[in-house]
Length: 383
Ligand SMILES: Nc1ncnc2c1ncn2[C@@H]1O[C@H](COP(=O)(O)OP(=O)(O)OP(=O)(O)O)[C@@H](O)[C@H]1O
Ligand SMILES: [Mg+2]
Image (cartoon, rainbow, N blue to C red; front, side, top):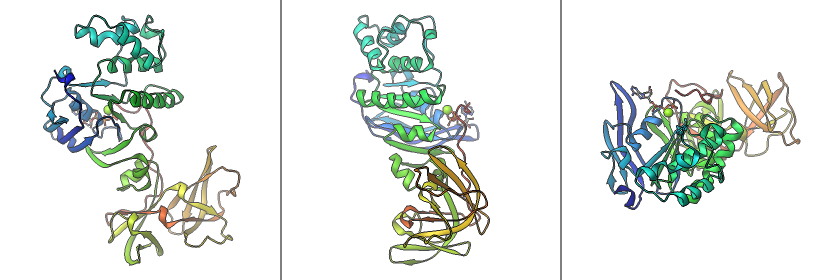
């Protein structure tokens, strides 16, 4: 039976799902290494749940394959797949106590002696002693952990998690993120975690895949994607980026030279996704420094002068908007370390950065600056 075969990497090959004329998942090619914590990140409606449902066997692919190791599992019935799913709504059985909820899978497979296994699972999710309670007598976070135990007791090769923390408040969410990561490390099962919370994806996953309109835009370790995004979508979906529209006009050593709105910038070729034509010069808000116009900008830095149009104090940092000479606004985050000068709306200031912190992206000729952050969907806005 499926559960006895050795696990392997989970591979999606040209996986496609169409609903009528609408393509929800568009020829997805993806390898998820065995034992890894993989996050599928994307805005509402981009095809995350549909992808998971095809892996779980709850949705039939229009075309393509779902492979586990060398086995195509796409034609297996859901309960024959070595895959379990944890959903946002925990779907615990309200009339059964916690013990029986967790014991459900093994009992259904005809296993009688489940006590030890259930105890182990409750201990894994830190709910020792809760076995005789009903789901309604637990908090949201505790119920979510029961749902996790109920899935893990089946020893799946792959655990699918579809926004499992969506119903929890922020603080509990953060706790459960750390908890989930600990459990994944302990059990070593492949976790595929779906979320539209970029911080959640980055906190937990070894690998993050950013999905947009049924396709993967970029995939890699969180820090790698964040530091060097491949597309404008990724640059503004994973955190925020200032994207200044310009054109490559030459090269100097290992740097590409760009003109933008009459100013000149350079970006290392190694941080450039293209070496010609229309481009965006990208800089993250926290990579920008803000200084008084009277201050000498340090050597080797690029800079822009502007007028402060907004200053928002958010505790750990102050977030400024700086209007440039051509009217776009740059977003600048200044850490509240106590050492920095404060600026007020109306002040003139210089934003400067180390060119090694910039990145260069290809741009369609008709695209303009994107310097106002694109906000993520509010949590809980999903259907
Ligand atoms: N059974 C269906 N029939 C028609 N369209 C569907 C069906 N299921 C999903 N879709 C559409 O496919 C697209 C992808 O849906 P999916 O549920 O995979 O999105 P998602 O990325 O999980 O979004 P969310 O973050 O809101 O949960 C959506 O536009 C949705 O309306
Ligand atoms: Mg979904």
